[in-house]
Length: 59
Image 1 (cartoon, helix red, strand yellow):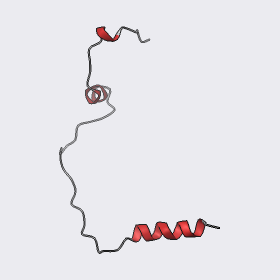
Image 2: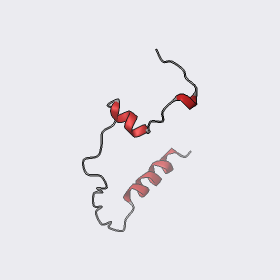
Image 3: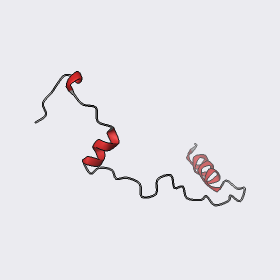
């Protein structure tokens, strides 16, 4: 059961610290790491596929 208290009496807890304490998140193993993206070939295959699907839906 949670007890309500006025805001002034609460101690602020950063959200990530609270979630880590609850086991809902964990710290990154390699913070700041970003995988390298492959060079594009100049085509937009996903955009073309979506456009084709949308065209099929029209009546």
